[in-house]
Image (cartoon, rainbow, N blue to C red; front, side, top):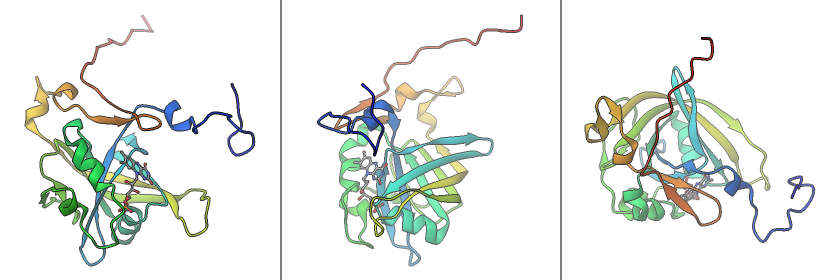
Length: 201
Ligand SMILES: Cc1cc2nc3c(=O)[nH]c(=O)nc-3n(C[C@H](O)[C@H](O)[C@H](O)COP(=O)(O)O)c2cc1C
């Protein structure tokens, strides 16, 4: 099959795009507003975009608080969502009114971060304290529905020692949750190693 998004129909019962770019890690984005009120929400349009300095992005399609808060304060924390906290992740996606605390709603405990005001989430093994580098506006289906990609520089990286084995992060001890298409999720519990060929020999 072939279709031109926005121009020709895909003729499938559901939009297949997200299922074609999968798995996507889930960034659990913690922010505060100008008054310091906490906000938390999961974003599957989330990834690393640069290694040195380390940078991550999340993109918001009409979800309001994470984008508004990170834009207002210039800061966010990106926790990498673990499979073990699926229930809490789901609850934190609830569209609570602005200023209401998704940490409390999801039964999560907040911990202070080191370099930024947004909170860490107790029990999450990988969490990145970020300063906003750039916010890129994205096309929006409705004028009152802001869509944007927030790119942040990682200024502090927390890794629980419990998931470090032989000096390396062991992803199987962490089991990050990944979003697929539709209502599907996956997690990584098995990996394999490939050594790089010496192409210039
Ligand atoms: C697993 C998961 C992934 C999500 N990913 C996104 C995403 O990438 N972009 C988005 O706009 N909303 C996404 N959502 C929905 C937001 O989490 C939800 O709209 C939330 O209420 C936004 O909160 P906020 O307005 O406080 O930022 C996702 C929800 C779930 C459960």
